Image (cartoon, one colour):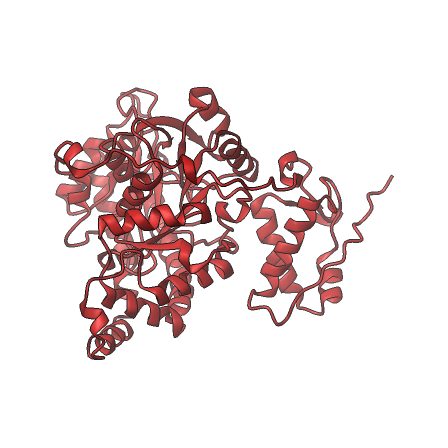
Length: 498
């Protein structure tokens, strides 16, 4: 019997600031959640829906592509487009009533006096100072609009505003918080109020603020394995206990996490671009992770560090956009979209936690310089930020292609390059040779002596010394100027292998 096309009626609001393709995405998600569209249902054809909405076919195609990437829809060629038959049942479950558990918040015992002295971080030191070729995590410095930025900072500095010279608001500069809230609603599907946005001086400061506000001593934390090196180093000093949870091509293995420690209180994840492997957390696992947080009253810390840069389709919606129970703490940074020396990041905390986080932010008294926050607010308000991101997506896509082509030519079958759909860095793996696994730490050390700044892949794993631990490199590509430079760097790196 032929499958029936859904008779779903979709309406869009042309007065709404939200782009039409994102409105279409939201209508489909809502229809699926409400049960109006069920797994296996055929959805309207591109041309038919475009005619119904009096919009361009490309607009509908853009929305469908996002929904396919997120796992809601499946395209089956000439057969049409369908609601994914493997959609988790919990996607269609109505949101539960929210309860205020603010009374359960306890101050963590994380004072400076209680922490052991911090040892120097070799990786942090290696990543500081003068940028070096192939260094991961760096945006394109040569393409940053310095003249515009200098003008905005100079205008603010010479404005005579006395507030710019005083102590900064620990929660952040109000206009910047407003612009971030608007940006997240339009670009990441995260609906929030400016009061929920807190400005920090980087991801480490964000984690400190979150843990001081919500964590208890000895809380257990799911941590991606492999996972972000600097976060692991910091967390190991804070009194929480890390539970390494394996990562595969669908992101963090939630089922395995529950087997390892179902009672963990936090999960730190990078859903849009897993650090360092680059995988995207699948919809099935996103729902499973949210279900775990709801049932266990856990907190999910979503590190959305470079989701603006996606080269296959539009940037995916954040995990926070699916959060019906307000259990996700969304974090991001301007280090990748602007430049790391700016030292500005932010977090969006659940409504129930705003008062507590605000108190802790005031006690830390670690606000970022108001002058730079004000200049960044102007940069966003005047449209420079959106234009800059658009230009960088195109530029990074080109530079990524240059270095990948050069690496494949230089290494041949000795290097496995599987590109993720986004990011400004990627992981490559060494093929095992006749003498066993390649010592990627030694290769990275030789590369460092040769002037390169690649990082060994194995040290991102909780157990980096086993034979089964993948060996490879983490490579940044945003600052590669042209094909000649890509070729030269690839040849230099190849010489470090032997």
